[in-house]
Image (tube, rainbow, N blue to C red; front, side, top):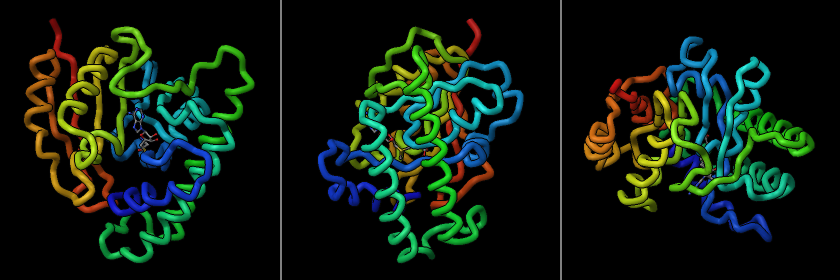
Length: 249
Ligand SMILES: C[S@@+](CC[C@H](N)C(=O)[O-])C[C@H]1O[C@@H](n2cnc3c(N)ncnc32)[C@H](O)[C@@H]1O
């Protein structure tokens, strides 16, 4: 994840005409989400769920196929299908070259090889693209929402569960604590029950320096905060999530 995503960020410059330069447009599958967020059937069934920011993940599409509606939001969704397809493919291809060069930095117990990693990243991208295109033709569809954090276009308590992966904490080098705090406050406003955030480390594999402060912030807003190990690790140290559960009362 760490170098993989950093390299994607560098790759953006060659996608002409896009203002996606600072965006890393890479996505994960349903199975990866299930593991990185330790999701069981009871966490998902009958819940209103927001994936934020969702990027080119196939989670919402795969959940829809399972009969559970997930809303995905991301600032990149303001761009066209063609732009996102070109950007997504370029990022995956560029990243794979870098992973190949640095393969010893990663843990290869989930993906057996770079080939398998590339297959999975393209599976997520293609699953997202097919569903994104399909929803463009469905009038009134609200599965993919363009939104720029730290602000969300949703009502207070609109979602039972919010999942946020590979965004907060990971980009600590370019997003300051004020942005993290504002984003967390917004996620807490929109969450009725629970928020799960993965991973808790930055690109160097170091635990987010202000994690304790973030947990105190959540506590003071009425959320119980718990660091929970998860059965998913690709980048070293990226093996735990933060669970924030709204306390009764
Ligand atoms: C690396 S992707 C993560 C996608 C997905 N959650 C995953 O785990 O694969 C990060 C996403 O954050 C989005 N993003 C970056 N800054 C944002 C912001 N301020 N508001 C909303 N989305 C943002 C990017 O467009 C990108 O799709």
